[in-house]
Length: 386
Ligand SMILES: Nc1nc2c(c(=O)[nH]1)N[C@H]1C(S)=C(S)[C@@H](COP(=O)(O)O)O[C@H]1N2
Ligand SMILES: [Mo]
Image 1: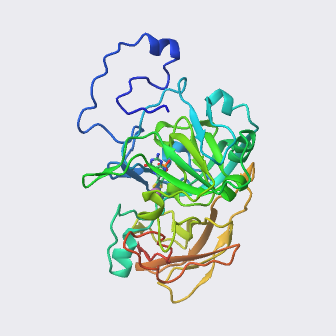
Image 2: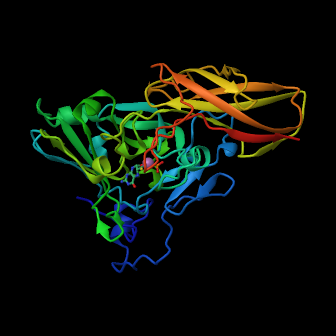
Image 3: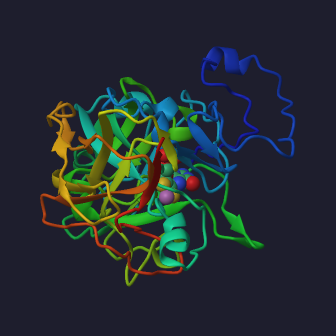
């Protein structure tokens, strides 16, 4: 197994030959080394140390997809640096006829696919449990920026598993990352890992090496990550080191202790955000166009209702033409807009409530759970008209 830490000296650009000529002494990681490697300009991100939230007000209304440099980051530990020339994906377990150790070149030999997904952390919106429902949930206090719509490039996990001889009685696949063990309050939980059903593996799971037409950035899983479309962020294991395929149900603390409400969480709920700062101050004008986006883990968005008067009156938002993410499989979020006609100066509250193609809609109140997952209630977004 290729196990690498941020102390590994090999940079992304280092070829095997260049790497071989590097001195063997590797200085230990200094305390306070960054846990995220890409730049986090404050106008784009809220920096939480190991996590970084996208600012909705920085989203370009003309850009449908979220480029990797703009995408939120959620790390349990730190972004590792992995040498792609020695990288191997290990596939093992009693659910496959033969174990394998696949190089990136071997993986690229499978049919290439693109898939667009709403990529979102389970805890997105968690801060609203406190600010809107009066009960604080533990964990990163995200507003709504732990989400993006990403077009991934890779291969279908189904193709790889079938080539290795998937056994008909295989039921469970455990994906394990190559990042450092997760240690919390003195307990070492081992590497970040999470099981998922073989049915999802065969349906639409992707082994992705690229996003927005480029290699994955280190923070987003270089050189390979798992993508389970529509599923909770944690299901999308970064720096994928191994897949254990099993004929019995597998578990991990990331499916039993965390990311679990009466069972392991899978499909993300429906949510909406305005492309505005919190407490935005808007210059008075005869017409103010406001924009936002809605998304769901279960499928495309069917409709969005908005209120610009704190919920007293509602009207449909204008949904923007779909299909801009249609190349390849999957779906992304839906962009929408609404117009404030001759608004009076003063404070007001904006609300958006989306419904997906499965008929799932955003409630007024999100179901309480102590870890603050799945905050899907309509968010009350304050603005002031100057
Ligand atoms: N190996 C590994 N995979 C991981 C994580 C991690 O810490 N280590 N975090 C998970 C969580 S909780 C989320 S929300 C997503 C975040 O992906 P991103 O940082 O690329 O946006 O990665 C998931 N995959
Ligand atoms: Mo997450």
